[in-house]
Image 1: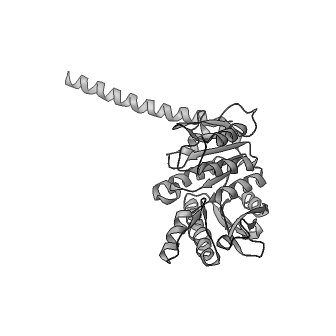
Image 2: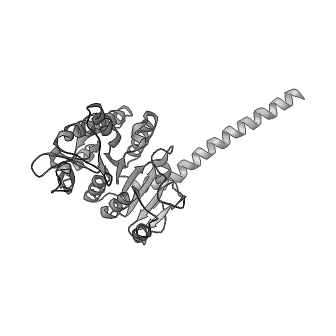
Image 3: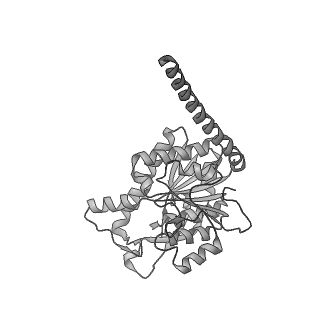
Length: 305
């Protein structure tokens, strides 16, 4: 009897292993139509928040981006790095001051900002991607005049190096994509007088996505998406998003992300939590998704299309 009981336990274990294998195979089958639909399509991914600060999360997200590239999707990464900038400024006894979420940046701070964004962080991201076997090249918006900027507040000397996007030249980005590289872009633009300008990464991602006519714009955040009384809103039209801003349901730091999404004129914008395991893959390759999708073309009915 003991031997029989042991055999039954063994059989149950084998059945569980088989069921898990079947579940994994089912996920791959579910992903197939999306892989086919998105082959050779450009996805602009804004990478920032906690997913950039924790080493485990950083490797996880960048490995997922490498997987997207391996199945034929063409990712373009725009990264932030606000907390790293604050850290280095603190080390040199320069305070980090924000007004309405915008960092005061003058000539004395900009060198540290550019060093952190275009140097340290840009090359860390590029290095991890290259280790996955996914060839990546790190650039800033100043390279090849890729992102031209103008002063956001031209009459305020405290914001003399804070910019907004004036224009985007995608020749270098297209050249990198055509050469099978993943472009990794820091949000430092070329000012009108040739100086470096610190630009909000969401704005840069939106402008680059628009200039590239990207298939998707994906904004990785530290929240699950757009929430209403703590519940995730899985899908919105552009018109509905504007209504929620007016009603105060969308507020705080989510407002500029939504505004960037609407300004991109990209049909499919995704806002999702970069700290959630496999968030990118779940959002792109499953029917249900995991974040909030904003559809600027109201005729598109399904989340994952």
